Amino acid sequence: MQTIMIVEDDPKIAKHLQDYIEKYGYRVSFIMDFERIMEVFQEEKPDLVLLDINLPSYDGFYWCRQIRQLSTCPVIFISARTGEMDQVMALENGGDDFITKPFSAEIVMAKIRSQLRRAYGAYAQDAKERFLEVEGLKLSPERLELTFAGEDTFLSKKEADIMETLMNRYPRVAGREDLLEKLWDDQTYVDENTLNVNITRVRKKLQSVGIADGVETVRGVGYRLKSLLKEE
Image 1: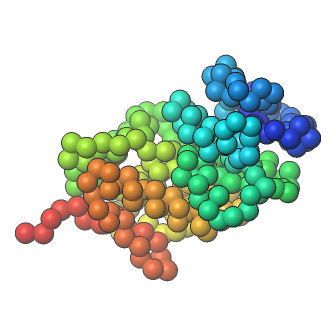
Image 2 (image 1 turned 90 degrees about the horizontal axis):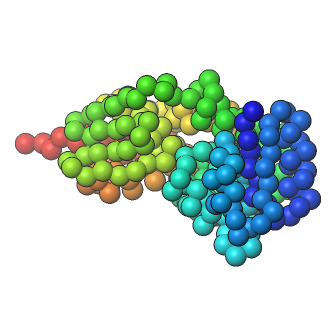
Image 3 (image 1 turned 90 degrees about the vertical axis):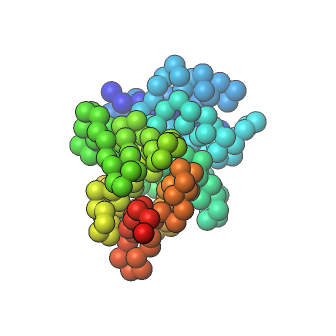
């Protein structure tokens, strides 16, 4: 039985989520002591986390960064904040999705099931370790590592998925639909800006290993990995 951990300081919302999620056969663990979030996370080893932003002591962005040091399990932010920058920060700090309050329990459940399928189910990657290489750029999708010219960096699961798609399509264009299908099997609830933010994060990771402007935008179509070979 898969475990969903709820980190929400409004007990009514937490209970509403728990009751609804348990109806679908999942086990639910929710935080009572917000000083022990990481301790409970390590004890419970949840398959997915629903995480509020406004929490006592430290906000959800902080806790998501702490989770990312230990796990790549899906993290879905749930917050009353509706600003675009809050959604960007949620993704930048390692979140996989963002739901605004007030929310529909049906949509929350759809997003949970979608993320679980991506991470562990029918759409999860084969357990056998794989390596991809394009013009000296090396990707380990299972290790979430990207290496180029002796420099390496750690990727989030979604960043690795984007890089895998770009490298598999190289030198062709990876369409936006291709990328959305790779990242989220249920595209109905995906905000257009979510893909843009993740592409920006991939560009930054490429820059960190010495590849500037590594992803080219093909207007109206999608994105393409630029050639890494210097012209003579």
